Amino acid sequence: MRDVARLANVSVATVSAVINGTAVVSAERAARVKKAMEALDYHADQIARGLKTGRTRVVGVVIPDVTNPFYPEVILGAEEVAGLGRYSVILCNANEDPAQEERQLNTLFSHRVDGVLIACSDPAIAMDRLLRRRFPIVCFDRIPEGFRGDTAATDNFAGGYQATRHLIDLGHRQIAILAGRTELSTHSGRLEGFRKAMQEAQIPVLDEYCHTGVMQVETGYRFGRGLARLATPPSAVFCSNNKGLLGFMRALAEAGVACPAEMSVVGFDDFTWTESFHPPLTMVAQPARELGRQAMHLLLSRIEGSQGHAMAAEGQRVQLAPELRIRQSTARFENAFQTAKRVVTG
Image: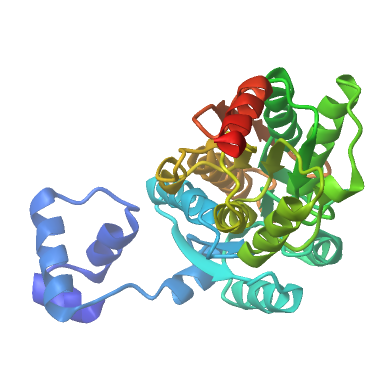
């Protein structure tokens, strides 16, 4: 800072005021300081500033799977709000590994970030870890059971219910579901929404039509191949996970099952590629970017509020509504049956 002050012909206090915005500096002097900083490639020591002020203006975001296209959308929204508040974001990918997630939380804590947004890899394991933390934490998307801090999530129950109700309203009664890990709040909510819609319509949920567990592209592929081999395959399927949906659609194509003529499909999470399928896919869309914005708003409010260094006994809970976007992968059961019959009989 002394070098910058000497080159700009101002005091060190003036340089500090320009960097920190702590006092009014004339436009001409501020321009000289910024020009000197650029010439010397000077950057403020954020760690030293953080030790002095108790704030680093850096927050962490921990996600379970960077390859899932849902999370980059969330991050874009979170970074937008963080930038407006002059905060920087450190992104960590846990790769669905609780041990890696723990290491990343320790690293963020040691770097004195002001707070963390986290979608937990394993909520059951994460709960105790989160309660031990001494900085503000907001859970988004995946919410650990019993967590009483700030949360932001989509109404997954409503999304599962809407998707299933849509298929029922089209006349389908043999409906399958491909769901993710039910210990995650996201997938348990979608599964419960599915079950509620089926129960209201008095339609049984058959074991051979239901798959839950770790969800990857290959999982969806195996489930799709298995359904195609059944003596009585379902006429409709709700895929509650976007990765599983990719594998499932590949399986239908390889098995020669026409969609929606022989099987209607509804997926969860809507991205550009869902409209590029043939046919374009009916999807339950999450407001992913808005979810990121709301989660970051909660975190910055907690950081800058009167309770800045700890979670409140009862946090705020933001729940966003999903949207069913109907395209061409779903059709009325009668029409599907007639079309399939024409294909079989030639």
